[in-house]
Image 1 (cartoon, one colour):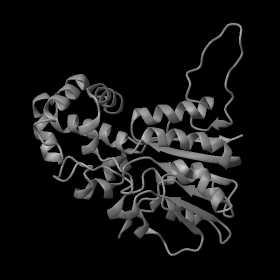
Image 2 (image 1 turned 90 degrees about the vertical axis):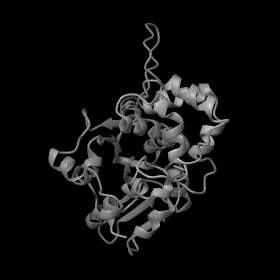
Image 3 (image 1 turned 135 degrees about the vertical axis):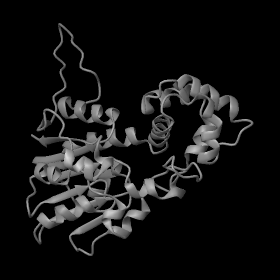
Image 4 (image 1 turned 30 degrees about the vertical axis):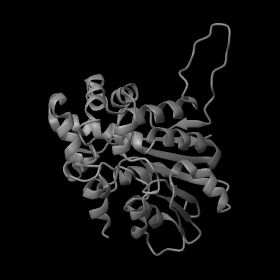
Length: 302
């Protein structure tokens, strides 16, 4: 499968520059996908360099280059350290994560990620996991649905939407995208496409526990990076970006507390390289509309 058709790598040159690649180093691509970022890293690695590519989506494996320097791990990047240790890798020179959903996942109708098609409401990035979006809609309480639409989708009428789903799900089927859209049609606000995109984003994040996985990845970075090693993380919405910014800056997800008599300030083992996130050029945004909301943040292990 052609990488361009599968997924166009976002902020490619900026990522390569940020990682400051050592030709003999070991690098991790946490989100292999179409392999665009990985191929560019391999081009800069020498014969002793190594690339570890993670991807929980079985479809990604068909994009693997025939290269002895590549180790493919078909699992979620939340298990980063575990699989590095399993392969006798104690530390790495750089970690890259592109947290966006691949174009391939959006364009494959049966995956259920896109509002453009009709298919089962699936949204699992890893087909081995149990819970689909349809199951979530059937089993979550009104309060749980309200919270996830509000937090993960920033849906303006999250409470009304949750109440509607719980009221209608006993009598109306919500197994497919079209069934779900028909069921909630009466509460859609503003631009329908934008509204549904926010709703679908919230469901996708919850189905795949994307926030939990990101937190676990970030917490492992200080332990897996060599001194001077770098982490480059590309986010696509404010929730992810906030987590990355906060962890890079203070080494935790807890809000900093000001105690006048205590000095318990968390010390981060990462130095922030990007005071402001790097965003795509206008040229890249025109070439690849899905890059518009991308933000790259970079930190270095001290």
